[in-house]
Image (tube, rainbow, N blue to C red; front, side, top):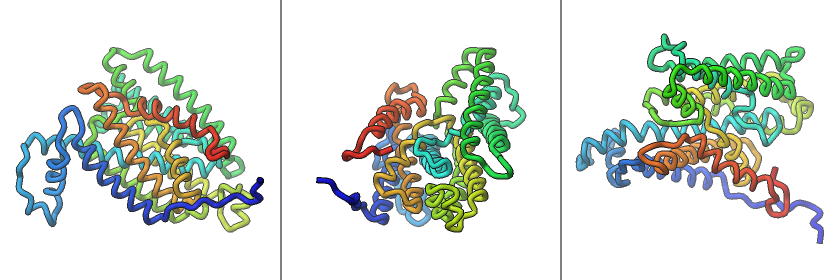
Length: 355
């Protein structure tokens, strides 16, 4: 029997989904902060975290060792918080790029941002070109590389004052290939093996060495971009209908496209600057989010942010436990996990193609 009209799937309410994910995020912070080569129990972790809260902190007796407090507050908590921010930024950036180019296979690095960041960061790590930037030389050099790359891509993709989407994608591929070639030349000229190893590890994506100071700029960029995207969620929905249809329905397409390129580039650039390249998050998470809450960007954006943050934190936990006391790059694990899942997503789901 053929059904003439598609049956509308019942989806959970947005409030329930957000509440469940918020609880999951809090539990993730609690348990992930205590896990590592030197573990701290969830009870001790909870006491240490609660002791820092303004209203209840004074009523909690100090029954933990100073070492546990240093591990939780000085090492693990900033790393977990950075993982939440990085994962959320990658997921939201993926949603933005997929709406911009109207292609569910787009990811945050499709415009060559990661390649530009890798080239400049490698140049700084191996040859000390950006040593004058001080403590944050690696992050700032990566952000500078990402910014210069997106500037080139943007200039090349402009046609008669407007962004031409096919040209945007092709210019991103071309600039990415150029930057990858420069990175290869830089690595082949590496003066020492240790520096080359550090560069390779960073380019594979890692949250090691996270500090509280690293959280400020990524959190600010994520907050501002999320506010802009949620304000313009209707424009994101209408872009999927095509430029002409979106324009006919009152959307200033050219202006919105420029703003989306800027927002996506900022999130991707800042994320790469603090964590290196972590792939598949911006590709997988938006798909799972649409399975869960549908395609309305008013729902997709906040749910993707929470799912992406939780995913990156737990992958980072696995990265530091699998071969402890050594660590695996987070980007390697996301690729190992994401590849098979993405292949599954290419198959039929409930008798229909998903992608």
